[in-house]
Image (cartoon, rainbow, N blue to C red; front, side, top):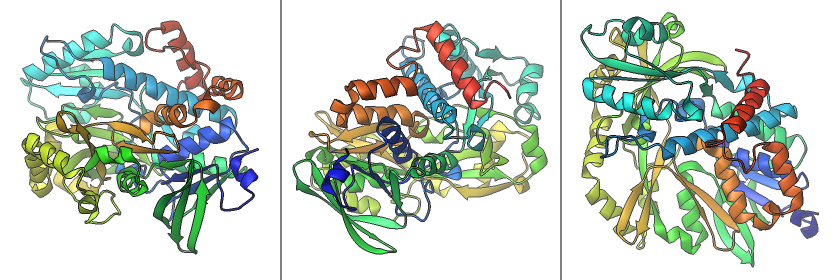
Length: 498
């Protein structure tokens, strides 16, 4: 029997998940599969799920597997690239595929609605970057997760891979490319909705849309009370567990909770923009995700890429993203978000980060004020024959990078981090990329921290092994298990049939 049933009240839930994005929808789906009796509430401030960071136009849409993202493998002083992050992200994405495959096998997801197979490419030009890419290829292609990576400096071959990138390029310009065919494009907005709708069909998950969390306070030992305000009026709900998966808004809610762990964090907002191709003939000539190398001083989300994308079922071509600075924590947020997040405890770390990252601040300001011609010039580095009339500017999503207080002062962290209260009754997800692609592993981490007894029970272990046949197995070092897992995922998700 669930806690909500024991409480005997419609305003008691076993868990309240704030934010109806890919993180909360993934957590709701996991909890529902592990214990169908749990009563869950998802609270969303907008009118539909998946409209903020998970929306198709608000993120890269890349199934981040470290196939082509060069910022995951930085060059080291010894002349080799760091690979630990690439292996970690690759394995995490495989777990996401494994979970979606299991849900598809159970008839709870239709992969073709949100997932499309698509080659992943890296492309660089200039002697220094070509040397870097070759070192990356040499190291990664020797390992099981990346053994199918292809390398080329042949103009004809690369032109077949990515014609728009090569046409019009100077004949004497040194360039190189890598290719992995087993890549994906994912509409995380659609996936979010599919996960929630599937969980709601059984009546175990309730969703409150157009509803904001006005208060979040302790209501007793291991019990929280949330004050909600929405189109249907005000409401108070109680729960032993709260998850804050509200994108950039999670930091403000974490601070509102008053848990000591919130004192160590502040936020650094970064905005983004895309150029979208309006010429469908051009869009049809490009098939793949082509990632380049970020400019010196750029944030991770500003790695340039020319992408085939499916948004709401329609194929399109995008370039970007262009970074910028905004004081909003959410795309549909307030210009006062950053200022409201400042407190006596996080002001000093914020100032320290600002002093240490003057170049980054200058870069973001320059990106924010660049002209149409400046943006187009960046596109032409990738697509030399591009014409300005074929492209339209679109606002991308808002991200909040983490500022963390450490013994050495404030530190700007580029990634995602789970913050949980000591008693495990509250968890929040802070940070940005590669979040959505690794959402399943991140939510499993939340369950390990906050649902420890359940996760160690025989019942949940058995169900986890059903959802993840490779559970507790190392996909990085065990090449046979990796092949088995990928074969199952490909078959159930339709990756091998296209």
